[in-house]
Length: 212
Image 1: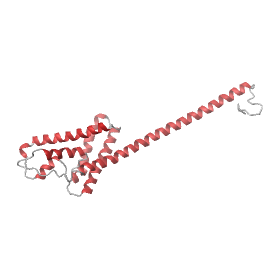
Image 2: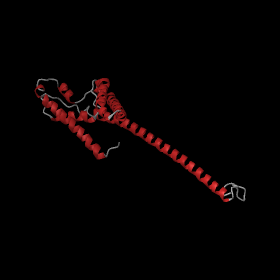
Image 3: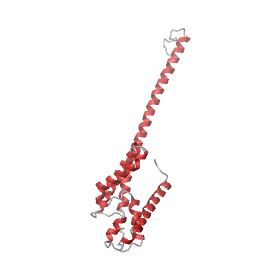
Image 4: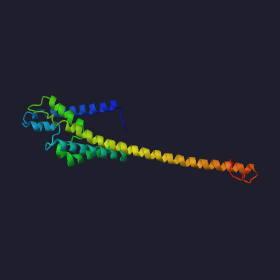
């Protein structure tokens, strides 16, 4: 369902902070190794994504497709599977997306997953590090927003269609009940009229309707 804007704001910042803290823990866990690792690009790859082939349009499309698939499949899982199965099934989905699409860009498929660690790489005193490649950083942010946004619109349209169908069904039922009610009322009036004129079922004008 829809979340309040403040809750969305809090979730985005919580995910980014969590990704930053996770990257900082990785830096600490491998602290002696940074000095003996000579390639700055290898060090950057520990923290954030980078494309196998630098092509902004293709990289953006890859991230959008991966995120679209993630949102689509996980929404289906949430609607059909028991609650306890959601987490492992979602993990399998992320793994499958990584196997199929990850080679192109490293599959961020979540802006926080790339931005938080990239920010950590820029801030932490990593021995012998290079730049944080901020020129590429917009792609793993915008791509997931596009892919996730498209699938979210699709889900909202589906929900709207289901809601409209339910309303139409209720309206049809109400109309049917109203029709039955009119028929029963008319039959009662006709019955009362027949009893009132001695069972002939006719008024002076020859009509068998109470207003005839």
